[in-house]
Length: 316
Ligand code: PEP
Ligand code: MG
Image 1 (cartoon, rainbow, N blue to C red):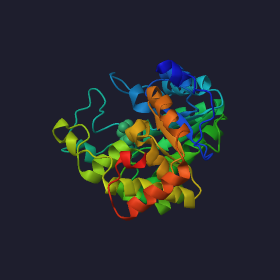
Image 2: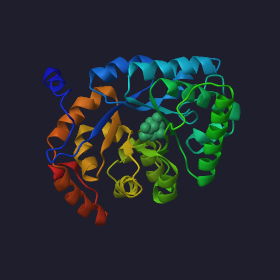
Image 3: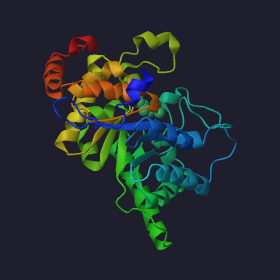
Image 4: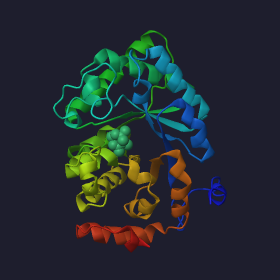
């Protein structure tokens, strides 16, 4: 029951063999922070900032964005808040902006969209950096595919930092910069990205869509949308493994992280940071508290080597 589940909210989240697992929340708007905290979220693992931009005719100003980010940061106290830069395009478009892309999921979306609109991107980065003076902020970049985009993004961040410094505006100069792992190209050639960024967050929703060539929003093909396809599992496992080698934290913030039926599988791949809808936190925590990490890692590694699809029931 919900009440029994709430009783585990404040116990340390670790496996039976003592591996500490982080549990964070995904939010779309600042007013969801209360719910996240009520379910024991240790941080915000994904703040989908595009919801500040959607369903309106004008763009939110730097000032309006700053207040939204600052509100989340202050409500979270010293807990980390991961703000994802604008992921617009594809299934989420700004009102009044006609979608001309023949295939928006493969078009000018997310970081591609932002790098093509430097003023919009700079305003958002300024707002996020200003909010970083009030707590523990992390910046998360969606849809990164190439190292050229990594360089352009860092140049943009550096130039925004320089102008804030010149204006005497406070920000955290060491704010961690991370990337979503959601385009297969990045997961396949993960090393330079793991090297360049401070942390990685796997967006399984898009990673599955792009790996399997299945539109995540098309109900006709939704039976083919398979999180357990061995290719998907190998990309996730490879990313987690790169994080271990490069000593960079890796989280999963796509829907897989919040599916309690998949918790043991993700633990078996070595995942130590989960971010999900607040309502899913305690169900997943219950699975973690009952799991034996080492045993799961051995089982999952063997199946991945054989490119077998792993059935969650086999891990019970
Ligand atoms: C994802 O792609 O898994 C993800 C978390 O981002 P979004 O669902 O917002 O695309
Ligand atoms: Mg995504």
